[in-house]
Amino acid sequence: MIKRKSLHTNFLSIVILVLLLAACGAEPPPSPTPDLQAAATSISLQQTIVALDATVQAHSATQTEAARATSTPLPTATLSPTPTATPGPLVIRDDFSVDTGRWIECGQCRIENGALQMGPYPISETGEGYLAICSDCGVVQDLKMGVDATFKDGYTDRGFGLVIREGNGNYADVEITTWQVYGAWVYDKSINAWDGLLSDDPWKLSGSLYPSYGTNRLEVEITSQGGTSTLSIRINGQLVNTGQFPAVSGRVGLVVGLHSLAVTFDNFYFEGEPVTQPDESSPNQQG
Image (cartoon, rainbow, N blue to C red; front, side, top):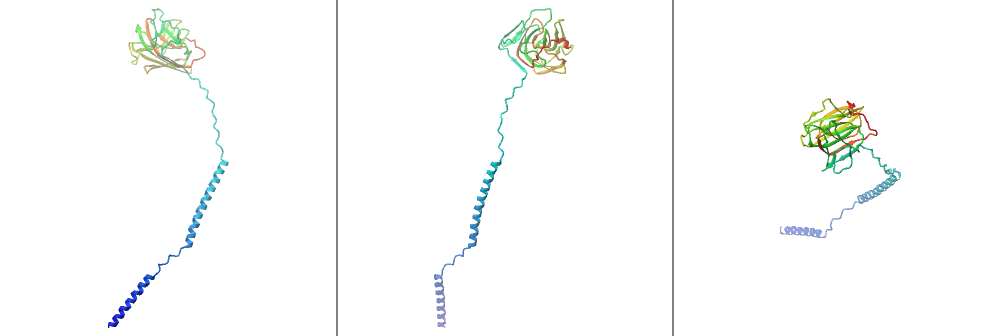
Protein backbone atom coordinates (compact mmCIF):
# COMPACT_ATOMS: atom_id res chain seq x y z
CA MET A 1 0.00 0.00 0.00
CA ILE A 2 2.87 2.27 0.81
CA LYS A 3 4.44 1.67 -2.60
CA ARG A 4 1.25 2.26 -4.40
CA LYS A 5 0.94 5.47 -2.58
CA SER A 6 4.43 6.50 -3.54
CA LEU A 7 3.96 5.62 -7.15
CA HIS A 8 0.83 7.61 -7.35
CA THR A 9 2.56 10.56 -5.80
CA ASN A 10 5.49 10.23 -8.15
CA PHE A 11 3.24 9.93 -11.13
CA LEU A 12 1.39 13.09 -10.13
CA SER A 13 4.67 14.86 -9.63
CA ILE A 14 5.83 13.82 -13.03
CA VAL A 15 2.59 14.93 -14.64
CA ILE A 16 2.79 18.31 -12.92
CA LEU A 17 6.40 18.70 -13.97
CA VAL A 18 5.57 17.86 -17.55
CA LEU A 19 2.77 20.36 -17.55
CA LEU A 20 5.04 23.06 -16.08
CA LEU A 21 7.70 22.38 -18.64
CA ALA A 22 5.11 22.45 -21.40
CA ALA A 23 3.82 25.72 -20.10
CA CYS A 24 7.28 27.29 -19.87
CA GLY A 25 8.36 26.09 -23.24
CA ALA A 26 5.14 26.82 -25.11
CA GLU A 27 5.36 29.26 -28.03
CA PRO A 28 2.81 32.14 -28.40
CA PRO A 29 -0.16 31.34 -30.54
CA PRO A 30 0.49 32.04 -34.14
CA SER A 31 -0.93 35.37 -35.70
CA PRO A 32 -3.88 34.99 -38.00
CA THR A 33 -2.98 34.68 -41.59
CA PRO A 34 -3.63 38.09 -43.36
CA ASP A 35 -6.43 38.15 -45.91
CA LEU A 36 -4.50 39.32 -48.98
CA GLN A 37 -7.59 39.34 -51.14
CA ALA A 38 -9.45 41.78 -48.81
CA ALA A 39 -6.43 44.13 -48.72
CA ALA A 40 -6.18 44.09 -52.47
CA THR A 41 -9.88 44.89 -52.76
CA SER A 42 -9.54 47.90 -50.41
CA ILE A 43 -6.58 49.31 -52.34
CA SER A 44 -8.42 48.82 -55.62
CA LEU A 45 -11.51 50.70 -54.28
CA GLN A 46 -9.42 53.66 -53.14
CA GLN A 47 -7.74 53.85 -56.52
CA THR A 48 -11.10 53.70 -58.26
CA ILE A 49 -12.47 56.59 -56.13
CA VAL A 50 -9.40 58.73 -56.89
CA ALA A 51 -9.67 57.98 -60.59
CA LEU A 52 -13.40 58.68 -60.64
CA ASP A 53 -12.91 62.02 -58.86
CA ALA A 54 -10.30 63.05 -61.41
CA THR A 55 -12.64 62.08 -64.24
CA VAL A 56 -15.50 64.14 -62.80
CA GLN A 57 -13.28 67.20 -62.36
CA ALA A 58 -11.98 66.90 -65.93
CA HIS A 59 -15.52 66.56 -67.30
CA SER A 60 -16.73 69.57 -65.31
CA ALA A 61 -13.86 71.68 -66.64
CA THR A 62 -14.66 70.59 -70.17
CA GLN A 63 -18.35 71.50 -69.75
CA THR A 64 -17.45 74.94 -68.32
CA GLU A 65 -15.17 75.75 -71.25
CA ALA A 66 -17.81 74.57 -73.69
CA ALA A 67 -20.45 76.74 -72.02
CA ARG A 68 -18.16 79.75 -72.20
CA ALA A 69 -17.49 79.12 -75.85
CA THR A 70 -21.14 78.73 -76.84
CA SER A 71 -22.94 81.14 -74.44
CA THR A 72 -24.57 84.23 -75.93
CA PRO A 73 -23.02 87.42 -74.53
CA LEU A 74 -25.33 89.72 -72.60
CA PRO A 75 -26.43 92.76 -74.57
CA THR A 76 -24.60 95.96 -73.78
CA ALA A 77 -26.78 98.42 -71.85
CA THR A 78 -27.84 101.31 -74.03
CA LEU A 79 -28.53 104.63 -72.37
CA SER A 80 -31.93 106.01 -73.25
CA PRO A 81 -32.00 109.57 -74.48
CA THR A 82 -32.89 112.15 -71.86
CA PRO A 83 -36.68 112.54 -72.03
CA THR A 84 -37.99 115.93 -72.93
CA ALA A 85 -39.94 117.46 -70.09
CA THR A 86 -43.64 117.61 -70.80
CA PRO A 87 -44.88 121.15 -70.36
CA GLY A 88 -47.09 121.38 -67.32
CA PRO A 89 -49.50 123.98 -66.08
CA LEU A 90 -48.31 127.42 -65.11
CA VAL A 91 -48.01 127.68 -61.33
CA ILE A 92 -47.71 131.01 -59.51
CA ARG A 93 -47.34 131.56 -55.77
CA ASP A 94 -47.17 135.03 -54.28
CA ASP A 95 -46.75 135.71 -50.57
CA PHE A 96 -46.39 139.45 -51.23
CA SER A 97 -43.08 139.64 -49.43
CA VAL A 98 -41.85 141.87 -52.26
CA ASP A 99 -43.50 143.83 -55.05
CA THR A 100 -42.77 141.90 -58.24
CA GLY A 101 -44.93 144.14 -60.45
CA ARG A 102 -47.33 141.24 -61.02
CA TRP A 103 -50.51 143.11 -60.02
CA ILE A 104 -51.68 145.68 -62.53
CA GLU A 105 -54.65 147.96 -63.28
CA CYS A 106 -55.21 148.65 -59.60
CA GLY A 107 -55.46 152.28 -58.55
CA GLN A 108 -55.51 151.73 -54.81
CA CYS A 109 -53.12 148.81 -54.31
CA ARG A 110 -49.98 148.64 -52.22
CA ILE A 111 -47.84 145.83 -50.87
CA GLU A 112 -46.83 146.26 -47.25
CA ASN A 113 -46.22 144.05 -44.21
CA GLY A 114 -46.22 140.94 -46.41
CA ALA A 115 -49.70 141.48 -47.86
CA LEU A 116 -51.45 143.26 -50.72
CA GLN A 117 -53.91 145.91 -49.56
CA MET A 118 -56.69 147.06 -51.88
CA GLY A 119 -58.74 150.16 -51.01
CA PRO A 120 -60.44 151.94 -49.49
CA TYR A 121 -61.73 153.40 -52.74
CA PRO A 122 -63.51 156.76 -52.90
CA ILE A 123 -67.27 156.94 -53.01
CA SER A 124 -68.64 156.24 -56.49
CA GLU A 125 -72.12 156.12 -57.96
CA THR A 126 -71.31 153.54 -60.61
CA GLY A 127 -71.42 150.45 -58.42
CA GLU A 128 -68.41 149.08 -60.30
CA GLY A 129 -65.92 146.89 -58.48
CA TYR A 130 -62.16 147.35 -58.33
CA LEU A 131 -59.73 144.84 -59.78
CA ALA A 132 -56.09 143.85 -59.49
CA ILE A 133 -55.16 141.73 -62.52
CA CYS A 134 -52.48 139.03 -62.30
CA SER A 135 -50.36 140.05 -65.28
CA ASP A 136 -48.37 136.80 -65.65
CA CYS A 137 -51.29 134.42 -65.08
CA GLY A 138 -52.34 135.08 -68.68
CA VAL A 139 -55.69 134.39 -70.32
CA VAL A 140 -57.06 131.06 -69.07
CA GLN A 141 -60.15 128.90 -69.12
CA ASP A 142 -59.49 126.05 -66.66
CA LEU A 143 -57.70 126.89 -63.44
CA LYS A 144 -57.16 126.47 -59.73
CA MET A 145 -56.80 129.63 -57.68
CA GLY A 146 -56.81 130.62 -54.02
CA VAL A 147 -56.05 133.50 -51.66
CA ASP A 148 -56.25 134.47 -47.98
CA ALA A 149 -58.59 137.45 -47.63
CA THR A 150 -59.06 139.68 -44.57
CA PHE A 151 -61.41 142.61 -44.00
CA LYS A 152 -59.36 145.67 -43.10
CA ASP A 153 -61.64 148.71 -42.88
CA GLY A 154 -64.82 150.30 -44.23
CA TYR A 155 -68.34 149.05 -44.86
CA THR A 156 -68.95 145.43 -43.97
CA ASP A 157 -71.92 144.78 -46.26
CA ARG A 158 -69.93 144.28 -49.46
CA GLY A 159 -67.82 141.53 -50.93
CA PHE A 160 -64.22 140.85 -51.96
CA GLY A 161 -62.39 137.89 -53.43
CA LEU A 162 -61.21 136.37 -56.73
CA VAL A 163 -61.74 137.41 -60.36
CA ILE A 164 -62.21 134.22 -62.40
CA ARG A 165 -62.85 135.83 -65.83
CA GLU A 166 -62.11 139.33 -67.16
CA GLY A 167 -62.19 140.83 -70.62
CA ASN A 168 -62.68 144.43 -71.73
CA GLY A 169 -63.81 145.51 -68.25
CA ASN A 170 -66.50 142.83 -68.00
CA TYR A 171 -65.78 140.17 -65.40
CA ALA A 172 -67.00 137.30 -63.26
CA ASP A 173 -65.92 136.85 -59.66
CA VAL A 174 -66.45 134.95 -56.41
CA GLU A 175 -66.82 137.15 -53.33
CA ILE A 176 -67.04 136.65 -49.55
CA THR A 177 -68.19 139.09 -46.88
CA THR A 178 -67.80 139.68 -43.16
CA TRP A 179 -71.47 138.69 -42.77
CA GLN A 180 -70.65 135.04 -43.52
CA VAL A 181 -72.24 135.08 -46.95
CA TYR A 182 -70.58 134.50 -50.33
CA GLY A 183 -71.64 134.82 -53.94
CA ALA A 184 -70.60 134.26 -57.58
CA TRP A 185 -71.30 137.31 -59.73
CA VAL A 186 -70.89 138.77 -63.22
CA TYR A 187 -70.50 142.45 -63.99
CA ASP A 188 -71.44 143.95 -67.38
CA LYS A 189 -69.59 147.22 -67.82
CA SER A 190 -71.64 148.29 -70.82
CA ILE A 191 -74.82 148.59 -68.76
CA ASN A 192 -73.19 148.91 -65.30
CA ALA A 193 -75.13 145.97 -63.92
CA TRP A 194 -74.49 142.91 -61.73
CA ASP A 195 -76.07 139.50 -62.10
CA GLY A 196 -75.69 136.07 -60.51
CA LEU A 197 -73.28 133.69 -62.19
CA LEU A 198 -74.67 130.40 -60.86
CA SER A 199 -78.16 131.47 -59.79
CA ASP A 200 -80.50 134.43 -59.66
CA ASP A 201 -79.92 134.73 -55.91
CA PRO A 202 -76.12 134.61 -55.65
CA TRP A 203 -75.65 135.47 -51.97
CA LYS A 204 -75.54 132.33 -49.85
CA LEU A 205 -74.92 131.83 -46.14
CA SER A 206 -71.98 129.64 -45.11
CA GLY A 207 -70.90 128.62 -41.64
CA SER A 208 -67.44 127.97 -43.09
CA LEU A 209 -66.80 131.73 -43.24
CA TYR A 210 -65.16 133.50 -40.32
CA PRO A 211 -66.96 136.77 -39.60
CA SER A 212 -65.61 140.27 -38.98
CA TYR A 213 -61.80 140.55 -39.12
CA GLY A 214 -61.20 136.83 -39.45
CA THR A 215 -58.97 135.66 -42.32
CA ASN A 216 -60.68 133.34 -44.78
CA ARG A 217 -59.12 131.08 -47.38
CA LEU A 218 -61.11 131.34 -50.62
CA GLU A 219 -60.39 128.78 -53.37
CA VAL A 220 -61.94 128.16 -56.78
CA GLU A 221 -61.47 125.48 -59.42
CA ILE A 222 -62.80 125.58 -62.98
CA THR A 223 -62.85 122.64 -65.39
CA SER A 224 -64.41 122.70 -68.86
CA GLN A 225 -65.81 120.09 -71.20
CA GLY A 226 -68.06 120.33 -74.26
CA GLY A 227 -68.44 124.10 -74.04
CA THR A 228 -69.46 124.07 -70.38
CA SER A 229 -67.36 125.13 -67.40
CA THR A 230 -67.86 123.75 -63.90
CA LEU A 231 -67.00 126.04 -60.99
CA SER A 232 -66.24 124.64 -57.53
CA ILE A 233 -65.98 127.00 -54.56
CA ARG A 234 -64.18 126.17 -51.31
CA ILE A 235 -64.03 128.27 -48.18
CA ASN A 236 -61.45 127.38 -45.54
CA GLY A 237 -61.03 123.96 -47.14
CA GLN A 238 -64.74 123.07 -47.31
CA LEU A 239 -66.59 122.68 -50.61
CA VAL A 240 -69.59 125.02 -50.38
CA ASN A 241 -70.93 125.19 -53.93
CA THR A 242 -70.62 123.79 -57.44
CA GLY A 243 -72.27 125.17 -60.57
CA GLN A 244 -71.97 125.40 -64.34
CA PHE A 245 -71.88 128.14 -66.93
CA PRO A 246 -70.86 128.38 -70.61
CA ALA A 247 -67.12 128.00 -71.08
CA VAL A 248 -65.21 131.23 -71.76
CA SER A 249 -61.64 132.34 -71.13
CA GLY A 250 -60.29 135.54 -69.61
CA ARG A 251 -57.80 137.15 -67.27
CA VAL A 252 -57.82 136.51 -63.50
CA GLY A 253 -57.01 138.44 -60.36
CA LEU A 254 -58.39 139.95 -57.13
CA VAL A 255 -61.46 142.10 -56.53
CA VAL A 256 -62.99 144.50 -54.03
CA GLY A 257 -66.68 144.63 -54.86
CA LEU A 258 -67.53 148.27 -54.04
CA HIS A 259 -66.11 151.56 -52.82
CA SER A 260 -65.37 152.47 -49.19
CA LEU A 261 -63.88 149.05 -48.41
CA ALA A 262 -60.28 148.05 -47.64
CA VAL A 263 -59.11 144.43 -47.76
CA THR A 264 -55.74 142.66 -47.48
CA PHE A 265 -54.80 139.60 -49.56
CA ASP A 266 -52.03 137.09 -48.92
CA ASN A 267 -50.69 133.70 -50.07
CA PHE A 268 -52.06 133.86 -53.59
CA TYR A 269 -51.93 130.62 -55.61
CA PHE A 270 -52.65 130.08 -59.29
CA GLU A 271 -52.46 127.00 -61.50
CA GLY A 272 -53.61 126.97 -65.12
CA GLU A 273 -52.69 126.67 -68.78
CA PRO A 274 -52.92 130.05 -70.52
CA VAL A 275 -54.58 130.07 -73.92
CA THR A 276 -53.02 131.91 -76.85
CA GLN A 277 -55.95 134.19 -77.65
CA PRO A 278 -58.12 135.96 -75.07
CA ASP A 279 -61.85 135.51 -75.23
CA GLU A 280 -63.37 138.98 -75.15
CA SER A 281 -66.92 137.78 -74.49
CA SER A 282 -68.72 139.50 -71.67
CA PRO A 283 -69.07 137.29 -68.55
CA ASN A 284 -72.63 138.57 -68.39
CA GLN A 285 -73.36 136.72 -71.63
CA GLN A 286 -72.65 133.43 -69.88
CA GLY A 287 -76.10 133.55 -68.27
